[in-house]
Length: 150
Image (cartoon, rainbow, N blue to C red):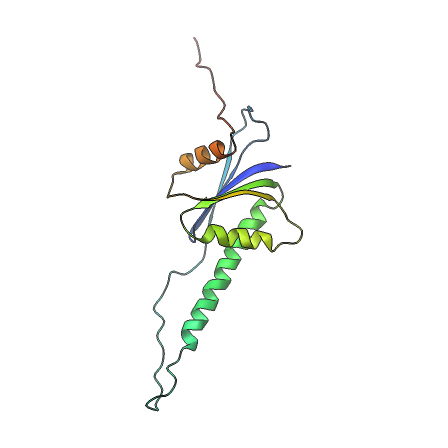
């Protein structure tokens, strides 16, 4: 199935919004929430050398950066695993630089090539605002329902 998909992402959460195949169908929009396991920045201390002008233990900081990099990559792979079976057109949006990291991670896959229609900046949103944003981006109007008559 080829679906239009929007992903709102920052380094804590990702919301995957899948629009129904038919523009005017009464199918519900699917919204999936994924959380990351990326640790917040913690203070990284070093050790002082016993010699007056010796090294100051910079390896601890580098190790923390490498750990964070691997956690981000794992989070992006988790998002890609969820969209892989069906996404053909994709828009990635959100407040942080994570959207560019996700786009790069998608580009590294040799066997998965959705068309990335856009990478957009967006503020914090509710789920309803995210769905409306994706619908507007893909020009996919919400289905109208007639009021019930007695």
